[in-house]
Length: 312
Image 1 (tube, helix red, strand yellow):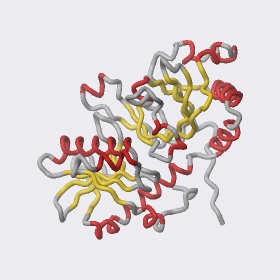
Image 2 (cartoon, rainbow, N blue to C red):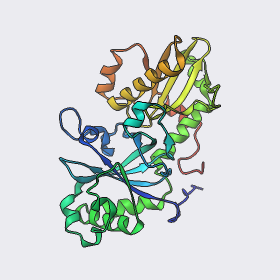
Image 3 (cartoon, one colour):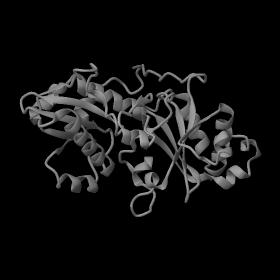
Image 4 (cartoon, rainbow, N blue to C red):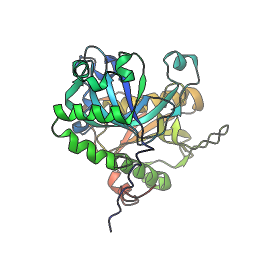
């Protein structure tokens, strides 16, 4: 019998709006970032700065500042907020807390500032009154409903989509990636035929394990941080249940550099990306480094997975 995913109780889920600059929603050519589009087939999950009270399953609108000035995306928090600030640079950037996220929906017709001006019921909304000057704002249930009504008027398919999303505690794509990660953590021996003799890292100071290991100061969490006892090196594993893209490559390179600087010292560090294939940009990037490797063993991992809707 197929298990039904538990619904998120109304009094537990929170709603937020994250405010972002064009540096983060446009690519270097000034075009909208392809990796933020859920229909691209590439990795659209990462981490974002957030409020310390953010919880896994919360729903988020992404407000794009000038030149767009609109709500461009619907996002879901894929983790609770975790502290990422431990140095002056992070604090200056305002990076106190971060959380993992998944882009769920891109609005073909975004909700614009003009739309908000023309909607009397939103005139008392805190983010609107503050002209979106800030990094994050909490949205009341009443204002969330009004914003969704506005978005549905401009995007006919959106109402059915958001109704479906709000019935589930966490998006199934997030759950499946978590289950794949857990399957790999419990079966690291699957990587031995590929030359990896791994054990999960254990921080000697904090006792934190290498699963979802937080990179203090730069943000983000390493999916699986391991030590290769045979090759005497650290291995950073990034697992994606989609195609790996340029975002994935940049992400794992950042984690490799952080581990080298903060933990490894003179011990070598390599990265291993496990995903459902990769795009041309990722393939080209692999050619310029000897520290990042790739495997496609998702189908093997699926044999060890719980169903995507099973409870955690």
